[in-house]
Length: 455
Image (cartoon, rainbow, N blue to C red; front, side):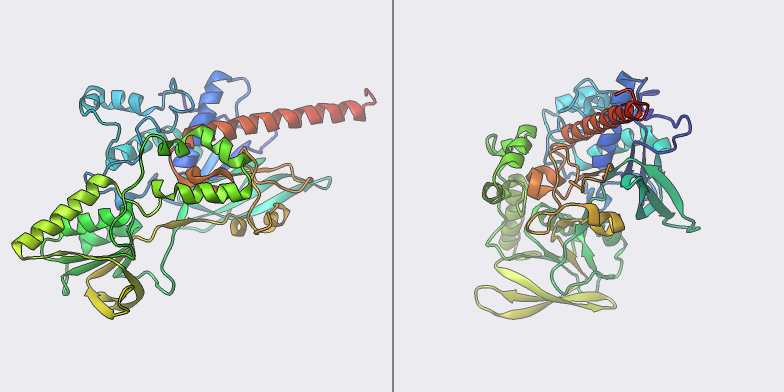
């Protein structure tokens, strides 16, 4: 792909970028690719973009890149194919360049391993090394005002390590792709022996001293089941307790008709629907994504439980209809406080580690936007109003576009934080940038004509 990634160099006296992306995970990576694809097609009118990423290098859920774990989406839902199958950044081109295209085809599977898909992401991200400032955290957004209008913003960033000198980058648009933050049970804090699943592979292999020979995993979704399987397989001398309030793991609904909720056209339907219908749709199809597990993994875990009963040595314990009520931290472990939902009985599990597979929640961009946030419009529930092009609706005197890469489930539906529509969404944001730039140029031309008395 050499030569295909140029996002646009700065020219002339105008130092403002067309876009600065905050965060460089899959969402803003897909947007970088969409911009690069545009610039390749129209090199005379490129979009100029740059990105800030607080990690030292590209990484996507590295703590859950478990051996053998597969993606829950088809490889065709990569960063480009749903938008432009001819893009040089497709998963198939990646396979060809890695010399594995025929081998992958022979697997007869639509679902690569998570490790392989992460390698695909890294392969794409490597093409944008010059456009991404790694190891930098955006700390402030400063509005740039001219003639009473906010025409740009200055993005202030600091290095995550080393000298903390500020850097400032001016842009006409922002793409906020800061990802998700762990959702923790009320009153529970992370610690040396209390982890969220995002840190599983960082923490577990280093756990050499295991006095209790027990792990407790809290949660009923895919990550919880995968963590249970991983710990059971990796620590054969330890008991693994799965704690969740349901009677059993629930299978994900991945049937063809239900999967239409992940189609790009479903975003249009959801966006245009009345608010009560939006709530109903999220309720109807929550079992396609939330607190559900791949059917094959459920059967594998059940077989494990049964065979251990046959052998009289039960290491995998399914503590269903229970709830975590608290965690006590200790120097060599953690005590999980559990309550039965059916009997009310309370008991403790002394564990070498308590793993919280309790999901994620979107990051509210308003604290980062700071002063600029007061110019953003909200709905009756205090949520940000977001237009169809994924741009926050703002006051009339604001010319800056703030695009959200996630956190828009209330306006755009269930795929807001998923990979399924990344390719199409990145194209929509790129198109919006181009349309807004053209509109601004037309306004400028008209203003110049008026000033010169030509109109």
